[in-house]
Amino acid sequence: MDLGCTDEEEEFRARLKAWLTRELPGLPPRPDPLDWPARRAYDCGWQRRLYDAGYADVHGDASPTQRLIFLEETELAGAPYVGANFVGLLHAGPTIAAEGTAEQRARWLPPVLRGDEVWCQGFSEPGAGSDLASLRTRAVRDGDAYVVSGQKIWTSHAEVADWCELLVRTDPEATSKHRGISWLAMPMDAPGITVRPLRTLAGSTEFAEVFLDEVRVPVENRVGEENDGWRVTMVTLSFERGTAFVGEVVACRRLLGELARTARKNGTWDDPVLRRRLGRLSAEFQALWRLVQANVSEAQATGGVPGAGGSVFKLHYSHARQELYEAAAAVLGPDALDLGRDWTLDRLSSLSYTIAAGTSQIQRNIVAERILGLPKGR
Image 1 (cartoon, one colour):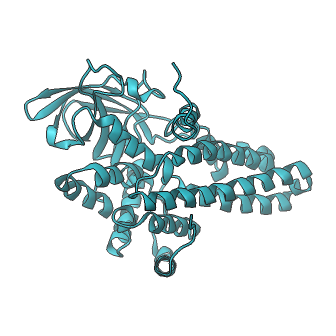
Image 2 (tube, helix red, strand yellow):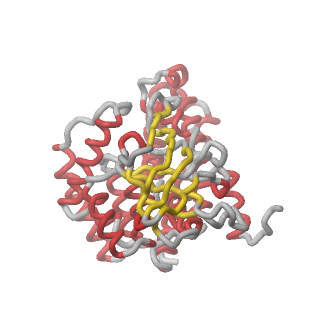
Image 3 (tube, one colour):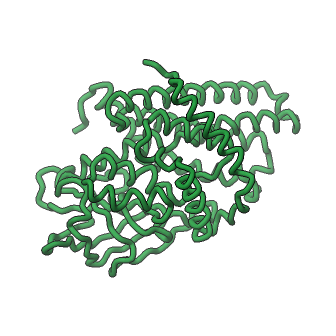
């Protein structure tokens, strides 16, 4: 497997780095991280700059390797993260590109790439978090629309979103809970939608619970066939687990360097246990980066959709990230309790990673069944 880049891809990297060097100094100050309307405006403004410069296609028609280069170089340069555009650019957009009709791609992809529209993810439910196939939000066909009623929770960016990638049960009598599910694009301004933000440990409200009371969603907004939503969802989750965290791996590797420098300054570097801990983490994140490259190479060879290897990455990355911020707490000492420090907020955020995008238990099942070929539990 070739993990290197072609001359054309290296030329793309050089051109991107030069553009970032010119563009980043002129950006406005970043908004308060707890102010999501301001963050939406800032994130969408950055996405528009990318679009105008011709770099928005990395989330559309570019190859997986070009997408990897883009995520690597923007993170290394300290460019704004996708932020409020996370779901649209890294989940819903790639799913629509892979599974949508020509009309759906023309309707939804350009506004996402321009930063005009923001998406949220309506997958999890109060009674079906890790067991996504047990969702109970129902969609009843009524002419040219589905009438949707139910509740979603942990809906990412719902309070600032224009659209929601929504999983609904369209056949409650299906013989298997994985059948009878459909994937809908729901406009967030439709009557019957109530959004209640949820406050995280860090004080932010990037999640919300969403209540749906007979919300009408046009049938033409269904991506894939009716009752084929589980297969479409596996495409969404492949992107979420396979490539969505790439930039964060680069950020973690950079953080390790900052931790080592801080440890040398405050004397904690004298602890051999801490030094071994940071060394082991450095090796783990280097291995994770190689795994990312392998997954991207596989995706490029098989049509662009990441495979089950994304679950291997997500499983290991989630735990490595938590270990990284535990090490940061050891370096900072009492300062690790200071909520004004980015590392402290990131540490609190890392606690969710073994749950978000599929729990570690779910990832182990996927690895066992789809990669190792072990029998399913009964």
